[in-house]
Length: 267
Ligand SMILES: C[S@@+](CC[C@H](N)C(=O)[O-])C[C@H]1O[C@@H](n2cnc3c(N)ncnc32)[C@H](O)[C@@H]1O
Image 1: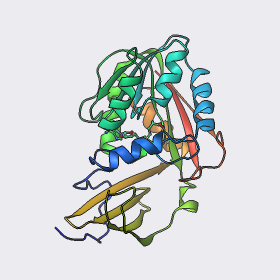
Image 2: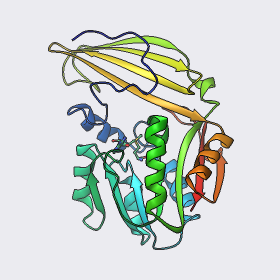
Image 3: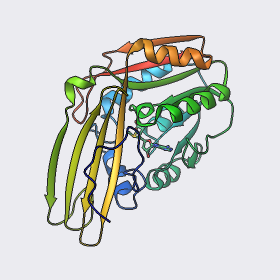
């Protein structure tokens, strides 16, 4: 194994995944559960705003599918309001935590790209810019699955970064040494981080080499950004009859960019 420092191809897969790595997935769970930060989930005030926003677009007692539900922060709030919820996430720590808290929410631990949870949903939600972490090909397959699983008049509600993301991100290289462990490993590690921009494909790639006593792990994460016209054209091509975009809904984000837009598409 060796350090990889070349620019990855857009949406190239890495051998390790930040959401399913046995150690990091538990750290992610702790990040989700911190109400103050915008780490793995947005801060609690933003979550409440997003729940109100989604509720204003769906019928009472809807069946909602939450793609990438994490530990069920949104799912629980919607369940309290009388909706039926299916949540899917491939982070085992998050799904174990969520399943133990509520038995009246259907949680699935799986990859929604590989195994889309078949069913009939009045609404499908995907929150915190996850649509932008998949390749265009995966996104198109996912959008078709979502469309097929929605009832007539059903809504797809998600957020993506806008083109203004380029104001907040830049190509760079950093390193971090943690002598007694931390977010990335339980004992000493060195983390080499690189950010690359792919302007043609409209995405940023974050590449991490994690060096520990035993091994080097390699992670890649992507952020694809869109403009309004592009995202609505994609949705209309899949068959959605309408697409509305909402910007500037949230206060400042203390972890990533808050140049995001919320998209509501109706079948
Ligand atoms: C940024 S977090 C957002 C979590 C949640 N939507 C929220 O806002 O609180 C992204 C979530 O999507 C999950 N995820 C990413 N890709 C996935 C996939 N292909 N299948 C299942 N879960 C996935 C991750 O494990 C993580 O919990």
